[in-house]
Amino acid sequence: MSLEAAIQARGLTRRFGDLVAVDNVDLTVARSQVYGFLGPNGSGKSTTIRMLCGLLSPSAGDIRVLGLQIPQQAEQLKRRIGYMTQKFSLYEDLTVLENLEFLAAVQDIPRAKARARIDELLTRYWLNDRRKQLAGTMSGGQKQRLALAGAVLHQPELLFLDEPTSAVDPQSRREFWDSLFELADAGTTILVSTHYMDEAERCHRLAILDQGRLVADGAPRELCAALPYVVWLVDCAAPRRAQRALQQQAGIVALAQIGAELRVLAASTAWDSASLAQHLRAASVDAQVRRGEPNLEDVFVAATRKPARVAAGTAATGAAA
Image 1 (tube, rainbow, N blue to C red):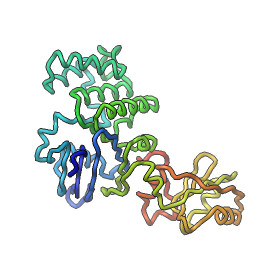
Image 2: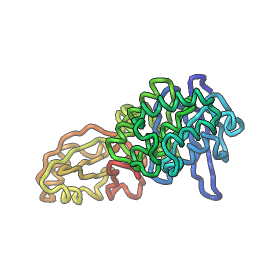
Image 3: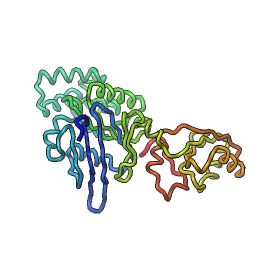
């Protein structure tokens, strides 16, 4: 096990009866890194996070988090990690200040130190003017900032975030991610699950889970560069007709209309721009075809595609639900 790694898991498995929710996952998260989990609902993201936190015992496998054996040393880990879920988990009938004071008391932070830390966080997360506001009356973005303040109040070495931005607007998401990188720059390791492609692209490293299995792991740019398929962009007046013409064709992995353009993911040996244009002309579609750059959505589609659905043109739509 590497001394530099904040998290290392080998053969991580969790069964619920006959259901294998997490299937033999190997994972390494370096310190001071923003590490992303991307995957469809039911892919095992939340179950994996709960095992890494020590909240759920694995059925098999070895876990070390911050040098501690988990779940055996989970109690020792608690004070060294923060945890934030997609559902607002603070008290809606307490004010912003009362919520943070309560968390400080639960974590046995001395009163003087807690007061200074709370003041610091209220300023950092733009909540100073909300001190006396009931948490339940705040907007989604404000609740998110309060929850983050609560999760880092005790200055954890490692922060687990389970789809923390699922209920906020794009501007709040952007501000939230700026806060995460500030934490990482200060030395906090962050593991965050998301179903937004733009968020996944911002991570230092990314794991894609599908049906409990780790199907891709690497820096977003590395994953895009290693994509074993070619992206073709089809510009035509009838993209829906072009899509129907290419469905069921051998070597076509995925089709997605992006505005007035059709994005085609294809086996590299099956098609080139000329053959695609010729096939479309035969279907009475006049099109310009050019090579495109792979993106993380292409990686996601390739990694999670089901063989029986390839011909039908499976495609992600900007967020993996």
